[in-house]
Image 1 (cartoon, rainbow, N blue to C red):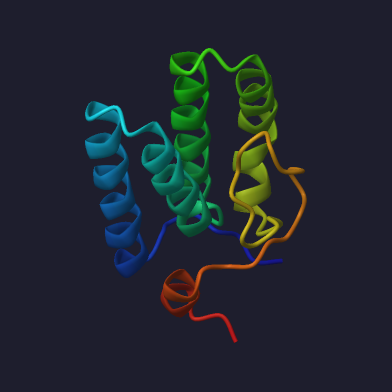
Image 2 (cartoon, helix red, strand yellow):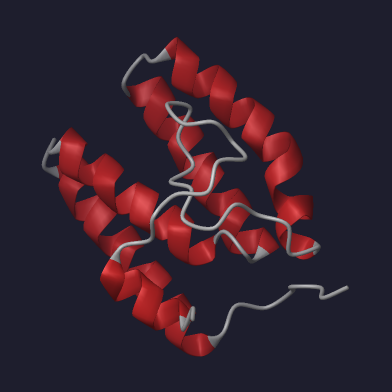
Amino acid sequence: MKFNTKIPKHLKQAYNQELKQYSFCLENKQFGNAWYHLERNHIIGQSYPIEHTYSHWLMLKFGFIQKDTKEVIGQIIRLLVGGWKSFINHVPLGNTGGANVPPLKRMPIPNDIEKLLDIK
């Protein structure tokens, strides 16, 4: 069994870039774009426990900002289980992480992220 502990440098850079874009959009009240970058951040970091958990933490905070009860409840559940699933390398690749999609559903990965992840 493969254990994921540390995100590779090139993925961490892409992950952080999505965080910057998220913060910029949030500060400028571009909430749709902010969420878009959170989803991309989640896809990039979902195989690594710290990054995966942090993505869900930000999604939880975003749910509170938006006063979205469904998102808040969905993120609390994901925070409880997401990190350990990353650690044991058992995540549904491409899943965008929001409460609007089933937590175990694999989803298509955007082409640019697919290249970063080097998925064949």
